[in-house]
Length: 245
Image (cartoon, rainbow, N blue to C red; front, side):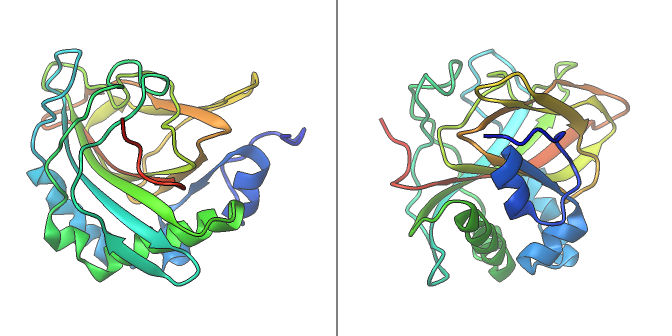
């Protein structure tokens, strides 16, 4: 049960906050402190978002999304993190009414990123954090680099609307927000009336979500200047295996 206290965006202990309200928002400094990844490492990855290929699977006919995808397996107790063979991304229709039920094969995350020791440190540290909320022996992690632009005048970070991902936990890391309006993050109780809305503006801040307890979305973006885009890294953590048909 959620406590009667108001939801908070400022939390000294993200584990306790996720356990209490189903989500937590970390500043960039807090993400760096919790994961041991220096801000310089995050910045070193930033150019890779300029190299994301177009998403060819958008069923709404849009041209506003580019992405790469990768899979990893993490054991929190031992610290082991291995890159899994590249595979299609799949979600059931129950979780994604727009793109569910189809196998979507995306270009893999570049080796210069996926093999970076700090990238591995980030994924493993978040796995350990989530394992403190829900004890688990092994996480099956899917990593998605997204760029949402305004090629058609509007870009949709979550064209499927407010949703759950069918996993245990989700981390949404903001990589860049350049000359855009909109892109408001919204988090709602999955089985209740409570909700909260805010705009992530600080690069490398992170929204951590308990996917069983909350649903989430980001509203469309519009340009506020040339080359308007919003870049994110979305990491999903699931026990029991990767989602598959």
